[in-house]
Image (tube, rainbow, N blue to C red; front, side):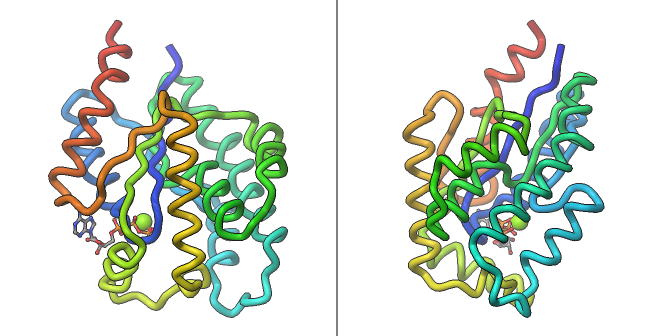
Amino acid sequence: MSGRLITLEGGEGAGKSTLLQGLRAYLAERGIEPLFTREPGGTALGEGVRALVLDPALRGMCAESELLLMFAARAQLVRESIRPALTAGQWVVCDRFTDASYAYQGGGRGQPRERIADLERWAADGLQPDLTLLLDIPVDTGRARAAGRGEDSDRIEREGDGFFERIRAAYLQRAAEQPQRFRVIDATQSPQQVLADAMAALEPLLAGSKA
Ligand SMILES: Nc1ncnc2c1ncn2[C@@H]1O[C@H](COP(=O)(O)OP(=O)(O)OP(=O)(O)O)[C@@H](O)[C@H]1O
Ligand SMILES: [Mg+2]
């Protein structure tokens, strides 16, 4: 049986990376050792692209370049890493995936949805997650959390609140359009409660994998 693809989505500082660590322990207890990966990144090429798209010096990057770079990294990740894992029956948990392009390059940068859908079909090989956990958080709360990590802000984090409000709205709209795939989690809750909600959302998939 092929593996399951679970993606974590949400704005800056929503708690995706924190949840990923919690899921690692939870799934290991059930004998599932997924491939954990992230976007942009996850491959040598993808990590190179990540450095480019997050580089604060590249202020002049146009929306079209950003969109294509994100999909260049994704094309590589799907073929080099995610597809082979799923085919081998391994589960995959990815910190951001194509929904992030609809939210960031679509909602945030105004790139047309059809253009992203076209890239999704060929560059991402049409790959769809089995389950997407959307960590929803007010923009200011998420940004305050991200700032609290004490790292220098990257090129995308330097955008204004309006950009991040559009991203949040685009994510929520996608979740409303595809309720069978998305679970929206209130990310203002404690890390323990966010993990508990995520585990509840995963239960049907886990039950299915034993069938
Ligand atoms: N539920 C929570 N409550 C309070 N603080 C949290 C919670 N989840 C994560 N944090 C803290 O908020 C900060 C951001 O969390 P994290 O790095 O997991 O977010 P992220 O969604 O991965 O962010 P980014 O989009 O920048 O990758 C971290 O310092 C983390 O410890
Ligand atoms: Mg993160």
